[in-house]
Length: 265
Image 1 (cartoon, rainbow, N blue to C red):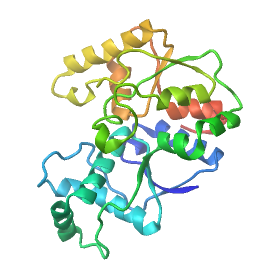
Image 2: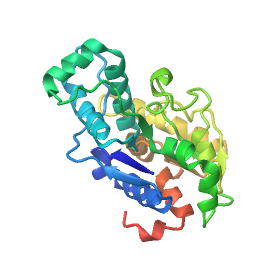
Image 3: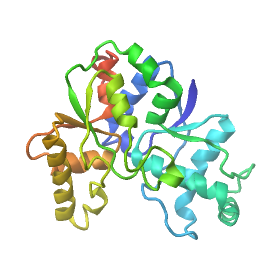
Image 4: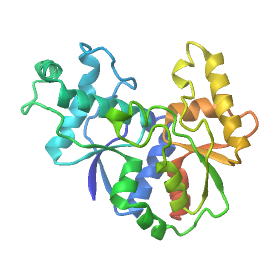
């Protein structure tokens, strides 16, 4: 299986572990990620205004590049996935906006939403399969109690993202079972951590992050896993005063596949 891959800015800097473990794990699973050439930052925040064209352009370039290569496009960062998937929907469903974007980019073949955008976890679930993943595990994380932290960007708006049930998601819990651990369900696993408010209202972000960490720990979680670098930063810096570790899901995947020690992250 071969996919085009959009890593995004954070996975080249603060979120290197999410990227490096993810790439190596896919290699072990026989999945090839081909990083898009000359990709640019997606903008990290989906542009809400319909006439906001410039902030959509980098996402459309990435989408058009994957189309021209004949590949589906895989993302790993929750924010990048959120932005690119929604911009793809705009290009598919809004002819006026798509025409205005083309006026800027002047692509040889106008882009109208042809590329299928997948999150890394969706590839594990829908293409590799969690049953097949479980067969490749050489160091099952038996006895580990792991809480899935979804946050908001992967799940909402569900009609556009189509990732999982926004009220009762299961994809990360099923991933946790596949690597041999025990998923811990807790009430705030799909609540926003407040990360986007950190600069404007750090107190609110800290309070929200601590509330999530306390809720997970009370339910029995020994560690939280996430796919979002912003959530990772907020939960680690503001929500773990009582020592609840937070890590990227790809690190535990690499550990279960027996390749973590090989990775320089």
